[in-house]
Image (cartoon, rainbow over all chains, first blue to last red):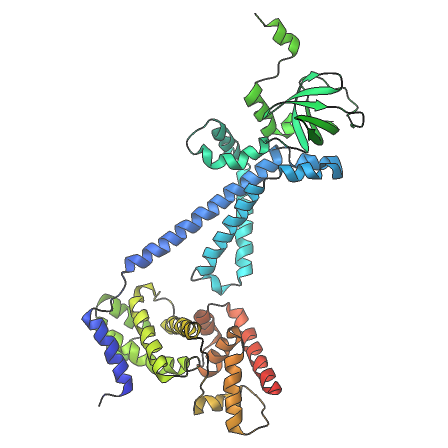
Length: 258
Length: 182
């Protein structure tokens, strides 16, 4: 009489011999491994690129410079912050972390160390990329409407959005109590009210300025204004040049009129 | 070379590449061990047999997923562990059953002091093991009842080796606490 132990063995072996239970093909496991590895590599590379874009954005847009206005510039800073880029970076790191967690080797070390290693690797990679022109090329491709430009446009165009609390651009006209400024999103009228804090140096056409304040009926009411070096905000400088070209004083424009 | 001279890993290679009937040897080697292990999760004999059968079938189906440079024992125990957890979650049943030999282990190695008769103590301990948190219960069971090393426990439960000792100690303390309260 077959004992219970043999019974289980016989049942299983009969399923195997009859072909009802089969070995899954080794190529399925190879494909799974390859897909997971490829997905991980792609996500890490994307995370490196996105982190590089975050650094690029912070370095060459108006965002960080609003903090130089002190407490008054905080709202403008928050308004111009690259939320989409930072959120994308966090999501990519999270997905990469999930892939690490499901892998067959991740459990050998505490997950915290692996996660920290991943973040450090991505950040170092992003920093290394700042020595290349990748971010500038991506910005250029976005505005040349090349194939794929739509992918990066939402991340980079936030630098050129209309802000309610801040403003950066090139002076083209100085009026009585107002300025006309060329910005990456168009021309703007800035109103210099009596309470506005202005720089000691006189303003002149062609100068790049940065201001905090508020909007009212389409005009921007300045509360504080600074003259800036456009080389420190290259994205804004390029945005203005793309829209309006190189600066020409008014008397030159008038001189060249037919 | 006779079958008993093959290591588990060599048998896996034989089954994969040459002779699937050699899988019967792996079943023979692990049937008793896994039955003892699964009894820590499943009390009903019929349910245990079903889960055990499922473990061996899944192991066979996924044999190409096994890396022969690793230990087969840890791999099949991991499959058994996952199937047991799935069974408990599906049927919302979790219970422990200790046999005489395992009861001796509790007595000698776990250093649990009890001031009541042995029969009642055994029920309390079985209950206590079933009630402590899963993350402490499993390494406790594998270490004391399945005689697994820290490295094997790390591979089976997929936790860092450095935390296995801590989990076992916390499991023992949780069990002692339960027994003191009850």
